[in-house]
Image (cartoon, rainbow, N blue to C red; front, side, top):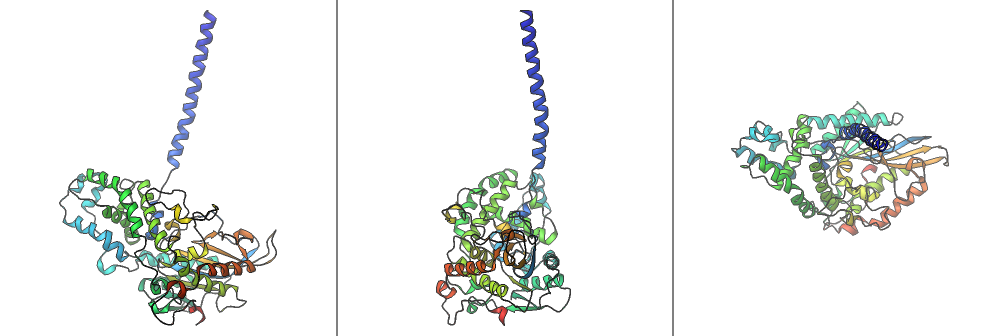
Length: 459
Protein backbone atom coordinates (compact mmCIF):
# COMPACT_ATOMS: atom_id res chain seq x y z
CA UNK A 1 0.00 0.00 0.00
CA UNK A 2 2.84 2.34 0.96
CA UNK A 3 4.59 1.70 -2.36
CA UNK A 4 1.35 2.48 -4.23
CA UNK A 5 1.05 5.77 -2.38
CA UNK A 6 4.68 6.59 -3.16
CA UNK A 7 4.09 5.80 -6.84
CA UNK A 8 0.95 7.93 -6.91
CA UNK A 9 2.77 10.77 -5.14
CA UNK A 10 5.65 10.53 -7.61
CA UNK A 11 3.31 10.56 -10.59
CA UNK A 12 1.47 13.60 -9.21
CA UNK A 13 4.75 15.38 -8.53
CA UNK A 14 6.01 14.52 -12.05
CA UNK A 15 2.77 15.73 -13.57
CA UNK A 16 3.02 19.05 -11.74
CA UNK A 17 6.64 19.49 -12.82
CA UNK A 18 5.70 18.82 -16.42
CA UNK A 19 2.83 21.30 -16.20
CA UNK A 20 5.12 23.97 -14.72
CA UNK A 21 7.71 23.32 -17.45
CA UNK A 22 5.02 23.63 -20.11
CA UNK A 23 3.77 26.90 -18.63
CA UNK A 24 7.32 28.21 -18.26
CA UNK A 25 7.91 27.44 -21.95
CA UNK A 26 4.53 28.73 -23.15
CA UNK A 27 4.61 32.08 -21.34
CA UNK A 28 7.71 33.42 -23.13
CA UNK A 29 6.22 32.27 -26.44
CA UNK A 30 2.98 34.07 -25.66
CA UNK A 31 4.86 37.19 -24.67
CA UNK A 32 6.98 36.97 -27.82
CA UNK A 33 3.89 36.57 -29.97
CA UNK A 34 2.27 39.57 -28.32
CA UNK A 35 5.40 41.65 -28.70
CA UNK A 36 5.78 40.64 -32.36
CA UNK A 37 2.48 42.21 -33.40
CA UNK A 38 2.97 45.65 -34.78
CA UNK A 39 0.65 47.90 -36.75
CA UNK A 40 1.26 51.10 -38.65
CA UNK A 41 -1.97 53.00 -39.41
CA UNK A 42 -0.14 55.05 -42.05
CA UNK A 43 -0.08 51.92 -44.21
CA UNK A 44 -3.86 51.47 -44.00
CA UNK A 45 -5.13 54.92 -44.96
CA UNK A 46 -6.22 54.09 -48.51
CA UNK A 47 -6.01 57.13 -50.82
CA UNK A 48 -4.47 59.40 -48.17
CA UNK A 49 -1.66 57.08 -47.13
CA UNK A 50 1.79 58.71 -47.29
CA UNK A 51 3.85 56.97 -49.96
CA UNK A 52 5.24 53.59 -49.01
CA UNK A 53 6.20 50.46 -50.95
CA UNK A 54 4.26 47.44 -49.69
CA UNK A 55 5.72 44.06 -50.60
CA UNK A 56 2.53 42.98 -52.32
CA UNK A 57 3.33 40.36 -53.49
CA UNK A 58 6.68 39.86 -51.70
CA UNK A 59 8.71 39.44 -54.89
CA UNK A 60 12.20 40.86 -55.33
CA UNK A 61 11.87 44.18 -57.19
CA UNK A 62 15.31 43.82 -58.79
CA UNK A 63 15.33 42.59 -62.41
CA UNK A 64 15.39 38.77 -62.61
CA UNK A 65 18.69 36.95 -62.98
CA UNK A 66 20.19 37.63 -66.39
CA UNK A 67 17.87 40.58 -67.15
CA UNK A 68 18.53 44.28 -67.68
CA UNK A 69 15.84 46.95 -67.99
CA UNK A 70 16.20 48.78 -71.30
CA UNK A 71 13.09 50.99 -71.22
CA UNK A 72 10.31 51.85 -68.77
CA UNK A 73 6.98 53.69 -68.61
CA UNK A 74 5.56 55.09 -65.36
CA UNK A 75 2.16 56.42 -64.32
CA UNK A 76 2.36 58.28 -61.00
CA UNK A 77 -0.30 59.82 -58.83
CA UNK A 78 0.53 63.28 -57.45
CA UNK A 79 2.24 63.56 -54.09
CA UNK A 80 0.77 64.40 -50.66
CA UNK A 81 -1.61 67.35 -50.36
CA UNK A 82 -3.10 69.27 -47.43
CA UNK A 83 -6.51 67.72 -48.13
CA UNK A 84 -8.78 66.68 -50.94
CA UNK A 85 -11.65 69.18 -51.17
CA UNK A 86 -14.35 66.50 -50.84
CA UNK A 87 -12.72 64.92 -47.78
CA UNK A 88 -12.32 68.33 -46.20
CA UNK A 89 -15.82 69.63 -46.86
CA UNK A 90 -17.65 66.38 -46.17
CA UNK A 91 -15.79 65.07 -43.12
CA UNK A 92 -12.96 67.18 -41.73
CA UNK A 93 -14.40 70.72 -41.71
CA UNK A 94 -17.72 69.77 -40.02
CA UNK A 95 -15.75 68.03 -37.26
CA UNK A 96 -13.27 70.88 -36.74
CA UNK A 97 -16.07 73.48 -36.82
CA UNK A 98 -17.96 71.62 -34.11
CA UNK A 99 -14.72 71.24 -32.17
CA UNK A 100 -14.20 75.02 -32.18
CA UNK A 101 -17.70 75.68 -30.84
CA UNK A 102 -17.87 73.03 -28.14
CA UNK A 103 -17.49 73.58 -24.39
CA UNK A 104 -16.32 70.03 -23.70
CA UNK A 105 -13.52 69.73 -21.16
CA UNK A 106 -11.26 67.53 -23.25
CA UNK A 107 -8.64 67.33 -20.52
CA UNK A 108 -10.90 64.78 -18.82
CA UNK A 109 -11.56 62.77 -22.00
CA UNK A 110 -8.78 60.20 -21.65
CA UNK A 111 -7.19 59.39 -25.04
CA UNK A 112 -8.97 62.40 -26.58
CA UNK A 113 -7.40 64.86 -24.13
CA UNK A 114 -5.12 66.20 -26.87
CA UNK A 115 -8.18 67.90 -28.42
CA UNK A 116 -7.99 70.51 -25.64
CA UNK A 117 -5.06 72.18 -27.43
CA UNK A 118 -5.10 70.64 -30.91
CA UNK A 119 -5.52 72.93 -33.93
CA UNK A 120 -6.28 71.94 -37.50
CA UNK A 121 -3.33 71.81 -39.93
CA UNK A 122 -5.58 72.64 -42.92
CA UNK A 123 -7.04 75.92 -44.13
CA UNK A 124 -9.43 76.63 -47.00
CA UNK A 125 -6.64 78.36 -48.93
CA UNK A 126 -4.38 75.29 -48.82
CA UNK A 127 -6.88 72.72 -50.07
CA UNK A 128 -5.44 70.54 -52.83
CA UNK A 129 -2.00 72.18 -52.42
CA UNK A 130 1.10 70.01 -52.25
CA UNK A 131 2.68 69.95 -48.80
CA UNK A 132 6.39 70.39 -48.15
CA UNK A 133 6.56 66.72 -47.22
CA UNK A 134 4.79 65.96 -50.49
CA UNK A 135 7.44 67.88 -52.43
CA UNK A 136 10.20 66.03 -50.59
CA UNK A 137 8.59 62.63 -51.21
CA UNK A 138 8.23 63.35 -54.93
CA UNK A 139 11.90 64.35 -55.14
CA UNK A 140 12.91 61.20 -53.26
CA UNK A 141 10.90 59.05 -55.66
CA UNK A 142 12.78 60.71 -58.52
CA UNK A 143 16.05 59.78 -56.84
CA UNK A 144 14.84 56.20 -56.35
CA UNK A 145 13.80 55.84 -59.99
CA UNK A 146 17.16 57.24 -61.09
CA UNK A 147 18.96 54.66 -58.95
CA UNK A 148 16.79 51.83 -60.32
CA UNK A 149 17.93 52.56 -63.87
CA UNK A 150 21.54 53.79 -63.72
CA UNK A 151 22.21 52.82 -67.34
CA UNK A 152 19.12 54.53 -68.81
CA UNK A 153 19.18 58.10 -70.11
CA UNK A 154 17.24 60.69 -68.15
CA UNK A 155 14.02 61.66 -69.94
CA UNK A 156 13.77 64.73 -72.15
CA UNK A 157 10.11 65.14 -71.15
CA UNK A 158 7.81 64.28 -68.25
CA UNK A 159 4.07 64.55 -68.82
CA UNK A 160 1.51 65.78 -66.30
CA UNK A 161 -2.11 66.83 -66.09
CA UNK A 162 -2.52 70.58 -65.60
CA UNK A 163 -3.56 70.78 -61.94
CA UNK A 164 -1.03 72.62 -59.79
CA UNK A 165 -0.48 69.62 -57.49
CA UNK A 166 0.35 67.29 -60.38
CA UNK A 167 2.64 69.80 -62.07
CA UNK A 168 4.50 70.54 -58.84
CA UNK A 169 4.80 66.80 -58.16
CA UNK A 170 6.33 66.36 -61.61
CA UNK A 171 8.78 69.22 -61.07
CA UNK A 172 9.85 67.86 -57.67
CA UNK A 173 10.24 64.38 -59.15
CA UNK A 174 12.45 65.74 -61.93
CA UNK A 175 14.68 67.54 -59.43
CA UNK A 176 15.43 64.16 -57.85
CA UNK A 177 15.60 62.24 -61.12
CA UNK A 178 18.00 64.35 -63.16
CA UNK A 179 19.15 67.32 -61.03
CA UNK A 180 19.19 69.46 -64.13
CA UNK A 181 16.95 71.67 -66.24
CA UNK A 182 17.21 69.37 -69.22
CA UNK A 183 13.89 67.60 -68.59
CA UNK A 184 10.82 69.49 -69.82
CA UNK A 185 7.44 69.33 -68.07
CA UNK A 186 4.69 68.81 -70.66
CA UNK A 187 1.26 69.86 -69.38
CA UNK A 188 -1.73 67.89 -70.71
CA UNK A 189 -5.11 69.59 -70.54
CA UNK A 190 -7.72 68.17 -68.16
CA UNK A 191 -10.67 69.05 -70.39
CA UNK A 192 -13.57 66.76 -71.27
CA UNK A 193 -13.04 67.19 -75.00
CA UNK A 194 -9.64 65.48 -74.88
CA UNK A 195 -11.40 62.12 -74.53
CA UNK A 196 -8.92 59.27 -74.13
CA UNK A 197 -6.06 61.51 -75.24
CA UNK A 198 -5.31 62.87 -71.77
CA UNK A 199 -4.12 61.81 -68.33
CA UNK A 200 -7.65 62.40 -66.99
CA UNK A 201 -9.83 60.38 -69.43
CA UNK A 202 -12.57 59.91 -66.83
CA UNK A 203 -13.42 63.62 -67.12
CA UNK A 204 -14.67 63.18 -70.67
CA UNK A 205 -16.61 59.98 -70.01
CA UNK A 206 -20.31 60.47 -69.12
CA UNK A 207 -20.47 56.84 -67.97
CA UNK A 208 -18.15 57.72 -65.07
CA UNK A 209 -19.17 59.68 -61.99
CA UNK A 210 -17.01 60.72 -59.05
CA UNK A 211 -19.91 59.82 -56.74
CA UNK A 212 -19.82 56.12 -57.64
CA UNK A 213 -19.08 54.04 -54.58
CA UNK A 214 -20.43 56.53 -52.04
CA UNK A 215 -23.66 54.64 -51.46
CA UNK A 216 -21.91 51.30 -50.99
CA UNK A 217 -19.15 52.61 -48.72
CA UNK A 218 -21.71 54.50 -46.61
CA UNK A 219 -23.33 51.21 -45.68
CA UNK A 220 -20.10 49.96 -44.21
CA UNK A 221 -19.34 53.34 -42.63
CA UNK A 222 -22.52 53.22 -40.54
CA UNK A 223 -21.66 49.71 -39.34
CA UNK A 224 -18.02 50.14 -38.38
CA UNK A 225 -18.29 53.57 -36.75
CA UNK A 226 -21.11 52.67 -34.35
CA UNK A 227 -18.97 51.10 -31.57
CA UNK A 228 -16.33 53.83 -31.96
CA UNK A 229 -18.98 56.52 -31.55
CA UNK A 230 -20.25 54.88 -28.35
CA UNK A 231 -16.69 54.61 -26.98
CA UNK A 232 -15.93 58.27 -27.71
CA UNK A 233 -19.34 59.33 -26.41
CA UNK A 234 -18.49 57.71 -23.08
CA UNK A 235 -15.28 59.78 -22.96
CA UNK A 236 -16.99 63.07 -23.90
CA UNK A 237 -20.79 62.83 -23.41
CA UNK A 238 -21.35 66.50 -24.32
CA UNK A 239 -19.90 66.11 -27.82
CA UNK A 240 -22.25 64.73 -30.47
CA UNK A 241 -19.98 62.36 -32.39
CA UNK A 242 -21.28 61.26 -35.79
CA UNK A 243 -20.14 58.61 -38.26
CA UNK A 244 -18.71 61.36 -40.46
CA UNK A 245 -16.76 62.74 -37.49
CA UNK A 246 -15.06 59.37 -37.03
CA UNK A 247 -14.09 59.26 -40.70
CA UNK A 248 -12.81 62.85 -40.52
CA UNK A 249 -10.69 62.09 -37.46
CA UNK A 250 -9.15 59.08 -39.18
CA UNK A 251 -8.49 61.10 -42.33
CA UNK A 252 -6.70 63.69 -40.21
CA UNK A 253 -4.21 61.02 -39.18
CA UNK A 254 -2.98 60.94 -42.77
CA UNK A 255 -3.38 64.55 -43.77
CA UNK A 256 -1.86 65.95 -40.59
CA UNK A 257 1.09 63.57 -40.91
CA UNK A 258 1.97 64.86 -44.39
CA UNK A 259 1.70 68.45 -43.11
CA UNK A 260 3.27 68.30 -39.64
CA UNK A 261 5.13 65.00 -39.75
CA UNK A 262 2.88 63.19 -37.24
CA UNK A 263 -0.64 63.25 -35.84
CA UNK A 264 -2.19 62.40 -32.46
CA UNK A 265 -5.12 60.90 -34.37
CA UNK A 266 -2.79 58.05 -35.39
CA UNK A 267 -2.32 56.96 -31.76
CA UNK A 268 -3.33 53.40 -30.91
CA UNK A 269 -4.99 54.87 -27.80
CA UNK A 270 -7.41 56.76 -30.04
CA UNK A 271 -8.03 54.18 -32.78
CA UNK A 272 -7.17 50.49 -32.52
CA UNK A 273 -5.63 48.44 -35.30
CA UNK A 274 -9.05 46.95 -35.97
CA UNK A 275 -10.53 50.45 -36.26
CA UNK A 276 -7.99 51.25 -38.97
CA UNK A 277 -8.71 48.04 -40.84
CA UNK A 278 -12.38 48.97 -40.82
CA UNK A 279 -11.58 52.45 -42.17
CA UNK A 280 -9.41 50.90 -44.86
CA UNK A 281 -12.13 48.47 -45.92
CA UNK A 282 -14.69 51.28 -46.18
CA UNK A 283 -12.32 53.05 -48.58
CA UNK A 284 -11.60 49.83 -50.46
CA UNK A 285 -15.33 49.53 -51.13
CA UNK A 286 -15.41 53.16 -52.31
CA UNK A 287 -12.59 52.71 -54.82
CA UNK A 288 -13.78 49.25 -55.86
CA UNK A 289 -17.15 50.66 -56.96
CA UNK A 290 -15.80 54.01 -58.14
CA UNK A 291 -12.85 53.06 -60.34
CA UNK A 292 -12.35 49.35 -59.71
CA UNK A 293 -13.84 46.06 -60.81
CA UNK A 294 -17.40 46.94 -59.77
CA UNK A 295 -17.51 49.77 -62.33
CA UNK A 296 -17.91 48.40 -65.86
CA UNK A 297 -16.22 51.46 -67.39
CA UNK A 298 -13.01 51.22 -65.34
CA UNK A 299 -11.02 49.04 -67.73
CA UNK A 300 -12.01 51.26 -70.66
CA UNK A 301 -10.65 54.33 -68.86
CA UNK A 302 -7.37 52.64 -67.90
CA UNK A 303 -6.60 50.87 -71.17
CA UNK A 304 -5.45 53.91 -73.24
CA UNK A 305 -2.42 54.42 -70.97
CA UNK A 306 -1.66 50.68 -71.01
CA UNK A 307 -1.92 50.60 -74.80
CA UNK A 308 0.15 53.74 -75.38
CA UNK A 309 2.87 52.60 -72.98
CA UNK A 310 2.97 49.17 -74.59
CA UNK A 311 3.50 50.80 -77.98
CA UNK A 312 6.40 52.85 -76.62
CA UNK A 313 8.05 49.78 -75.11
CA UNK A 314 7.49 47.35 -77.99
CA UNK A 315 8.97 49.74 -80.55
CA UNK A 316 12.49 48.95 -81.71
CA UNK A 317 13.49 52.57 -81.11
CA UNK A 318 12.06 55.30 -78.90
CA UNK A 319 12.87 58.94 -78.19
CA UNK A 320 13.29 58.25 -74.45
CA UNK A 321 14.41 55.46 -72.17
CA UNK A 322 12.02 56.45 -69.37
CA UNK A 323 8.48 57.77 -69.87
CA UNK A 324 6.84 59.30 -66.79
CA UNK A 325 3.32 60.74 -66.46
CA UNK A 326 1.59 62.33 -63.45
CA UNK A 327 -2.13 62.16 -62.83
CA UNK A 328 -4.84 62.12 -60.13
CA UNK A 329 -6.08 59.28 -57.94
CA UNK A 330 -8.94 58.28 -60.25
CA UNK A 331 -6.73 56.90 -63.03
CA UNK A 332 -4.37 54.35 -61.38
CA UNK A 333 -7.21 52.02 -60.18
CA UNK A 334 -8.63 51.92 -63.71
CA UNK A 335 -5.20 50.98 -65.06
CA UNK A 336 -5.04 48.26 -62.39
CA UNK A 337 -8.34 46.88 -63.75
CA UNK A 338 -7.12 47.12 -67.36
CA UNK A 339 -4.10 45.04 -66.32
CA UNK A 340 -6.23 42.56 -64.36
CA UNK A 341 -4.28 43.10 -61.13
CA UNK A 342 -5.50 42.92 -57.52
CA UNK A 343 -8.52 40.92 -58.66
CA UNK A 344 -9.90 39.11 -55.60
CA UNK A 345 -11.27 36.23 -57.65
CA UNK A 346 -8.75 35.98 -60.49
CA UNK A 347 -7.62 32.47 -59.57
CA UNK A 348 -10.87 31.15 -58.10
CA UNK A 349 -12.23 29.68 -61.31
CA UNK A 350 -15.34 31.86 -61.18
CA UNK A 351 -13.78 35.33 -61.53
CA UNK A 352 -16.67 37.25 -60.02
CA UNK A 353 -14.85 40.07 -58.19
CA UNK A 354 -18.05 41.87 -57.17
CA UNK A 355 -19.03 39.01 -54.86
CA UNK A 356 -15.77 39.40 -52.96
CA UNK A 357 -16.43 42.84 -51.46
CA UNK A 358 -19.48 42.48 -49.17
CA UNK A 359 -20.93 45.69 -47.77
CA UNK A 360 -21.77 44.49 -44.26
CA UNK A 361 -18.74 42.39 -43.29
CA UNK A 362 -15.05 42.67 -44.08
CA UNK A 363 -13.26 40.35 -46.46
CA UNK A 364 -9.89 40.16 -44.72
CA UNK A 365 -8.49 37.89 -47.43
CA UNK A 366 -9.03 40.31 -50.32
CA UNK A 367 -6.18 41.52 -52.52
CA UNK A 368 -7.96 44.73 -53.57
CA UNK A 369 -6.48 47.10 -50.98
CA UNK A 370 -6.46 50.77 -51.87
CA UNK A 371 -3.62 51.45 -49.41
CA UNK A 372 -1.36 49.26 -51.54
CA UNK A 373 -2.82 50.46 -54.83
CA UNK A 374 -3.27 54.16 -54.24
CA UNK A 375 -1.14 55.93 -51.61
CA UNK A 376 0.14 59.37 -52.48
CA UNK A 377 2.73 58.98 -55.29
CA UNK A 378 1.39 55.53 -56.12
CA UNK A 379 3.12 54.41 -59.31
CA UNK A 380 2.53 51.75 -61.93
CA UNK A 381 5.48 50.80 -64.13
CA UNK A 382 5.86 48.64 -67.22
CA UNK A 383 9.45 47.62 -67.91
CA UNK A 384 11.08 46.29 -71.06
CA UNK A 385 13.92 43.90 -70.28
CA UNK A 386 16.65 42.19 -72.25
CA UNK A 387 17.17 38.75 -70.69
CA UNK A 388 19.48 35.79 -71.00
CA UNK A 389 18.33 33.77 -67.99
CA UNK A 390 18.74 30.12 -67.04
CA UNK A 391 15.78 28.07 -68.25
CA UNK A 392 14.49 30.69 -70.71
CA UNK A 393 15.23 31.63 -74.30
CA UNK A 394 17.20 34.83 -74.62
CA UNK A 395 15.16 37.82 -75.76
CA UNK A 396 12.89 40.67 -74.73
CA UNK A 397 10.56 40.34 -71.77
CA UNK A 398 8.11 42.69 -70.09
CA UNK A 399 6.94 43.04 -66.51
CA UNK A 400 4.62 45.27 -64.46
CA UNK A 401 5.38 46.76 -61.05
CA UNK A 402 3.06 48.58 -58.64
CA UNK A 403 4.93 50.70 -56.10
CA UNK A 404 8.09 48.75 -56.98
CA UNK A 405 6.45 45.35 -56.35
CA UNK A 406 6.50 43.01 -59.40
CA UNK A 407 3.02 41.84 -60.42
CA UNK A 408 1.96 38.64 -62.12
CA UNK A 409 -0.15 39.22 -65.23
CA UNK A 410 -2.66 36.40 -65.40
CA UNK A 411 -1.94 34.39 -68.53
CA UNK A 412 1.20 36.36 -69.38
CA UNK A 413 4.02 35.17 -67.15
CA UNK A 414 6.13 32.88 -69.31
CA UNK A 415 9.37 34.74 -68.60
CA UNK A 416 11.81 35.00 -65.69
CA UNK A 417 10.50 36.62 -62.51
CA UNK A 418 6.80 36.65 -63.60
CA UNK A 419 7.72 38.60 -66.74
CA UNK A 420 6.14 37.99 -70.14
CA UNK A 421 7.81 37.31 -73.48
CA UNK A 422 7.52 39.98 -76.19
CA UNK A 423 5.12 38.13 -78.49
CA UNK A 424 2.87 37.00 -75.64
CA UNK A 425 2.84 40.45 -74.07
CA UNK A 426 1.78 42.12 -77.32
CA UNK A 427 -1.00 39.57 -77.80
CA UNK A 428 -2.08 39.82 -74.16
CA UNK A 429 -2.41 43.62 -74.31
CA UNK A 430 -4.34 43.35 -77.56
CA UNK A 431 -6.76 40.92 -75.91
CA UNK A 432 -7.25 43.32 -73.01
CA UNK A 433 -8.14 46.03 -75.52
CA UNK A 434 -10.74 43.79 -77.12
CA UNK A 435 -12.16 43.06 -73.69
CA UNK A 436 -12.72 46.71 -72.81
CA UNK A 437 -13.68 48.10 -76.19
CA UNK A 438 -13.06 51.58 -77.51
CA UNK A 439 -13.32 54.67 -75.33
CA UNK A 440 -15.84 56.42 -77.59
CA UNK A 441 -18.06 53.37 -77.92
CA UNK A 442 -18.13 52.63 -74.19
CA UNK A 443 -18.20 56.18 -72.80
CA UNK A 444 -20.56 57.65 -75.43
CA UNK A 445 -19.40 61.25 -74.91
CA UNK A 446 -21.72 64.09 -75.95
CA UNK A 447 -19.01 66.01 -77.82
CA UNK A 448 -17.64 65.58 -81.34
CA UNK A 449 -14.22 64.26 -82.36
CA UNK A 450 -13.79 61.94 -79.38
CA UNK A 451 -10.54 59.99 -79.36
CA UNK A 452 -9.93 56.35 -78.43
CA UNK A 453 -6.16 56.43 -77.99
CA UNK A 454 -3.54 58.28 -75.98
CA UNK A 455 -1.18 60.10 -78.38
CA UNK A 456 0.47 62.69 -76.10
CA UNK A 457 3.82 60.88 -76.23
CA UNK A 458 3.98 61.16 -80.02
CA UNK A 459 3.57 64.94 -80.17
